[in-house]
Structures are given as C-alpha cells and as structure tokens.
Length: 311
Picture 1: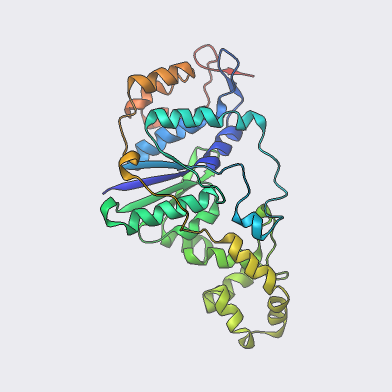
Picture 2: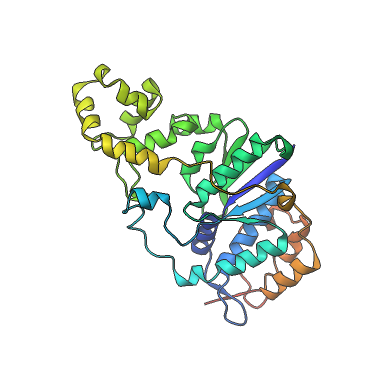
C-alpha cells in the first residue's frame, strides 16, 4: 500500500512547544518545539510507514476567511516569539530530511492539506491508495473518507487516535462531511464565530440526522417545531457564514509532487550532522528506525549533561 502522510505543521509545532520544557542548546538556543517536532516525525514514520511525506504550514498573512469575516480568529494571541523563532529551524530539518513543505497565500494549512489529499487520491499517476492527515485540529475530520484518515493528537504529542469514517460517526454522531454543517449551527469560539443562538450540540446532531446538510435544514423549516424554526430563521446569516468559515476548501493553487514527497532514508550523514548541531543526541539512534517503542515515546531529555539544558 502506498501511503501519503500530510502533516499539519503549525498544529504539531504548537503542541511540541507547549508539551516540552524550554530546552536549549549549549549555545542558549531554544529548541524545544524543534525537538518535539523531530521526535514526532520519527514516531510517525515508524508507526505509519509512509511512502510519501509532506508538511503544510500556515503563512503569517490573512486568509480568504478573514476577508469574508474580519473578526475571524481575532481573539487569538499572537504567536510567541520563542515559538516563531523555531520555525525556520524546523524547515531546515525538513529540507535536510527531504520532506517538502507546502504553503499558500490566502489559505490555511487545512486548505492546503485538503487539496493535497484530494489530488493524491483523484490523480491516478500518483498511485496513492491511502492518505493519513496528522493534526490536532478536529476541523480536519471533515476530510475523512474511504481512503483518507486522520491521526488526531490528543495529549501533547504522545497520544493519538486514528479516525476513519466509522470512528468519526461513533465518536461524534456525524458523518465526516457533516462536520462543517455542525460547526455552522453551533459555532466555533476558538475561531470567533458563534453559530445559531439557542442551537446546541444535541439539537444540531438531531437536525443533521434528519436533514443531512445545513442547506436541507433551511429547506425544511416548515417541518420543524416553531421554537427551533424561529431560532434558525433568526440565526440564518450566522449559520451560512459559519459554514463558509468551517469548510475546508480543496482547490488551493498547489500541486502535489509525489517524487519530491517520496520517503528517503533519514539516517544520512547530513541529517546526523544537523541533529548533532541541534544537540538532539537521543534522536540520532532513532534515525535508522530501529528504536524500541519505549525509546520512541515523546519525552523531553532528563539528563541535561547528555543532551539539552532546561532554562
């Protein structure tokens, strides 16, 4: 089976940064997010055995969602300098490993990943039979289908659940394609939009179970209880906006290059040299893919003299 792994770069970056202590090299460079990101890459390679590997990052610019809703994600704090300063180091690692990075102005990494996933499955020349998206963002679950799964990080960077269609339906009571409809109804405070006032998760699930999509819900208002009908009428503008914000687009102007994404040997002199420069001594033996499961767990180094220093 030829498997493509699509990594949500900023999702892993943030989790690594917050999950690990502030590790520094002997020169005083903060590298905890880089260490966690690299450790996660090696774990994914060992557990999921990809044929192809890519990473998508957000750009520090507004997206089309900000254009249609100026307050989109407005409540989120700016990325800490201690974290943003590590992004270029991570990109250097990815370049050295031969893992391509995708970004697109005006779009989020979610959209880039959705587009690459669609291209991988739809375009016959790639002969990719399965896509696995690695993220901590539940929005990505809307991309799950017969050939696309989501490896959802649950706790820092150490625990994850693999979601297929059945798992999504079992966990959330929704089909993957209904995730954006669901969010349109209940909102998403983390993205600063709030859905239809008075419609909670249970009611949203019931409505989608009966009518399948947001559009069909509004086409069948005459079949509903007056209270729910009034709430939906009052909140229609918010619901329609919410679906636009929640829906991952799959036509971003990027092109999957399967040859560049092909997984190569990580255990090369160039990679070892870079890891040694970053003082990732505990990761060097894992480059060959022979580490035990115990050693492959995402743990910060405990021996400061052997590896990195805690600030």
